[in-house]
Length: 321
Image (cartoon, rainbow, N blue to C red; front, side):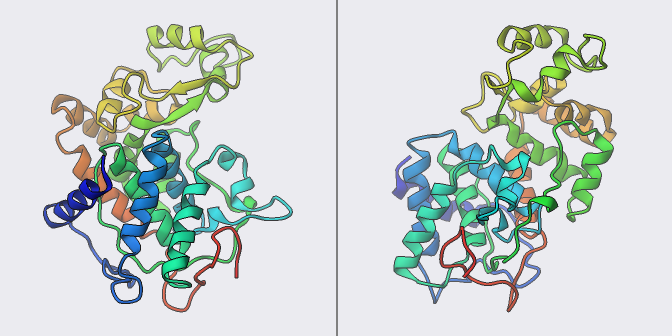
């Protein structure tokens, strides 16, 4: 999609699309006077990278999610540590990628408006624009976040792919998100890529008796075993087979068929509210999913943010000033 068309689409969607509550001092026009081209600069950079490698859309969306769930949306996942004890060094984040996109967007902003736009805001914008490049939903991103100065590997406690519904709901509630946000944001797995290492025990030795998880569709287990041998921990897997390059509601169809790749996918059928949402999206061909996803992403972007005099505006996203 051409950059010009993306810009036009973004303007149109901002007029007809998602409502935005505005707590905590964020503002859609935060950089209007100090860096009026900020969003256009970030979008241009994101398009350049994601149009060449579309799998970056999922990677950048995941990075934003992982950032917001540890110390809030403060860009702390971007920080490097000489002793390898920052958030990005934690096991769940070792497979996070796309840092070069954020760094490139920040470098372009520093040339135009030095010391103005935070890395936390850049990441929030990059995640949104990356999804838009692959024709996914657009959502407004209120701006004005500041960057955190602390990043600790020991604090990384993300929702686990092995978690049941109760633990997942607590993870989300602790961040001010609700059960609907949980099932809606799980829908991002429609463009997700994982690997055999995370599901081998689920399909080969679920209870230690050489069995598979009984919540899984047996035909899906057979298909997974053809791709993942017992000692294979590297082969990639699509989380929404056949639809991984398209941001759509198909993920809910596969979960309803008991073909969720992770326990955290399958367990969405164990709760009345999440199951009802899945059934509704299946029966209506995802009629509300894009709008729901946009609204949940706006909420995610407000999680535990720093504003005012808290934090800083990093000059380089990987290092505190």
